[in-house]
Length: 180
Image (cartoon, rainbow, N blue to C red; front, side, top):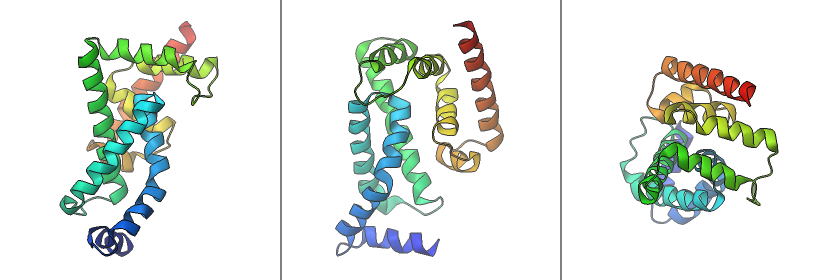
């Protein structure tokens, strides 16, 4: 924990801020990209959300109180940015979240950054039909293997509620996969 506090001080100190932020980018860019990509699906949208995430992290570092791990705080920002991005896109396109998700998944087949097969696309379709919270919990647990305790910090939800969401999501996905 002391190591993290020292690092945060380096991020806040003008003399060490640039090198510390470069380290932050090196350490967190790829995991945050993967996390955001699991939520927004599209590569270009993911890049936009990732950039917004790091801008928010940089601007709000002074407000970070250290009540959670830096990792959890950044993931919470990334999650909120991704959800906000999706909600704005839904409003802009005047469609439902589900319809937009299905449309994005249809475009996956031509996405050069997606190397999945038919089963993975089918899985993405099943996930798109889940309620937003179940989608998020499933993706964080299944794809990123985030522990419930860390997920609880990131999402501000109890471990029990997260386990229930994941269980319901898995059941719905299994039903979808069997019916196709």
